[in-house]
Length: 188
Image (cartoon, rainbow, N blue to C red; front, side, top):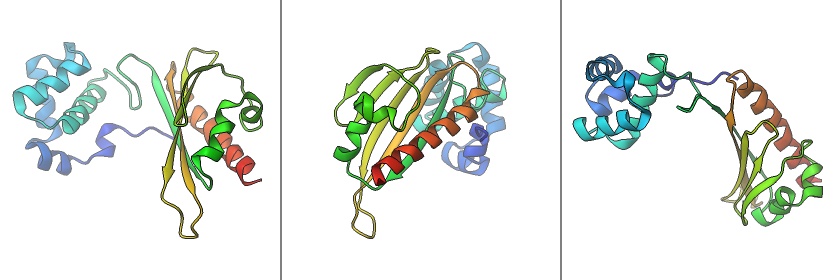
């Protein structure tokens, strides 16, 4: 699974309609202002403050600019690390899923790695630290019941601080398989 660039996520026509300029025009303006030497926050604030760009679009232009100028790869955070995210909707209530996240024995039935818990916000999220220093947050979001009336919950995994972009696809596959195991455990 390849991480899409900012340009692939939001087309130039949408960008121009929302901000009044194309990517090329924004990037030329940013180059002229010396933005290659600025940090991410400075660029986004400049776009908002000097050019009245909405915060959401300012972030998009900033990320696109950083990618276009080689300051970051698609999927890379400004600190040089990468993030992998995966979600799975399961038929259960958050109260039924929660113990499978926080109880070590129940968790080991679907997650074949041991990561120490670093934080819990009951019954919404649990945080872990992996051996390589990367971090994992698993969040539960209750959804509207399905057409059949069964309860549904979205289980979202954010695996952050990955040091290598080549690990993103592998990490996503790992979590996709792990969440499928969780779903099977909950169904059984």
